[in-house]
Every structure is written in structure tokens, then in C-alpha cells.
Length: 288
Image (tube, rainbow, N blue to C red):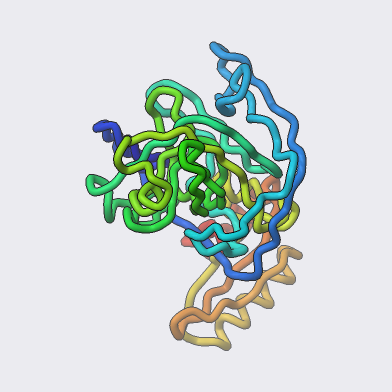
């Protein structure tokens, strides 16, 4: 089944070659949150993106109680933000999928499977190498990365997993576990198991990665790069006066990059055009 966005390999023996995307993370002390999120329906057979496995393709019911993490181990919880890559809505095998970028709460019961050696070392949907012995998972809709508590309802064993991949695209399965996670809760032998999935919210939605970034928008312009700081400073000051936009110098590996931004999406194209007309024909958009 493996995964998507956009290098997609499907671990049930199917491989679809698209473009792999990577991940941006940051560390911190997690805050486990709980909330409500109404189901959002699209209706089967329409052109709207598929949301999830709840009734009428809705997001399943929200959590009604805090996630109990006592004596549950697995992936280390971090306050990393959603990747700017791997979080666009997408299509697999003719089916559209919606990424729940603003998800606050998520609870679901259904069938989980696992994937292993055939994908070890390959890139996941957010560009990270897949470690089959780690505590990770693939989900069709959750933002990457997200954290889940997964409980095997057949033996009541639980594990914390970090979602960094897309899938499973097989039947009505709701989650694909790494071999390490599947082994911890007893899914290896039978291959599938009925599980309960609960979202562990580690970063408040208001502090999350901007949706424009996750959709591919790059809010900065790299204007020029030089080894001469005084030259970079002259260009910075000149552009600031001419455009009225924020311009700064970024020191990168002994080079000084003159950058403009952050820019709003509706002004970015005009700003790039103005910069190029000022003599910087090689200027380009960048994510940071």
C-alpha cells in the first residue's frame, strides 16, 4: 500500500510513480488537546474530494474524552508542525482524497494492516525514509505528520504512532502500520486487526503551518546571493525603498542571500515581477 503525495507507492503490490515531497519539523513540549469537529460530508459519486470513512464519506465522529496515554509507548511525541509537503489534496486510482488540515479531534474504529520490507528505505509521502522498524503509520486524510494512539481491539494492546505516509488504498482499511508498530500490538501474524484510532493533538491548529504553504505556496522571494555582505546590504536597502516590502539578508554557508517576504498570496506574483524588472532576472520563490 504505500502512500502518496506525490511519490506514491501502494503497498498491495501496486506502485505509482509521482513526485516525492519532504518534511519540515520543529521540536518542543507537546500539549495533548481534545475537542470537537463536526463531520464534513461530500457525498459519494461527486467531484468533491473524498473526506473519510465516516457516514457518507464524512470525517468520523470526534473524540468525546481525552486520550489516555498512561503506560502507552511507541513514537516520541513532539510539537512538530505539519510538513509544507505531502499535505495537498490528491487523487489515487481515480479517487479524490481530502487532507484534514484543520482537524481538531478524530476517533475511529476500523481495520488496520501493516507494510514492511518491500518499502523499507523508500520515501514516505512527506519525503522521509520509511523505517519499517519504527512506530509510524499511513493514513489517507490526516495531515503529515500527526500522532495517533492505536489500540488493537482484539487484545487491547496500544501504541503511539507518527503518521508520515498516505494509504492504505485497499478496501475499507483505515490505517497501515509500520512493522514495528504492528508487532507491538499483535498485528503481524494475522496481517490485519480491528483497531481504535485516536488523534493526539500536539500543536494547536492556530499555530500550525499555514494552509497556503501546505498547498504549495512559497511566500518568500530569493532576490540575489553573494559572498559580499556589503553588496547584499546595498541591494536589501535599495529594494526596501523601491518596493516597500520586507527585505532581509539570510546568511547561508558563507553566502548572503537577499530575500523578500513573507508575502501574501495575492501579491506574490506582482512582487516577483517587480524584482525581476529591477534587474534581478534570476529571482525565484522559496518556502523560507
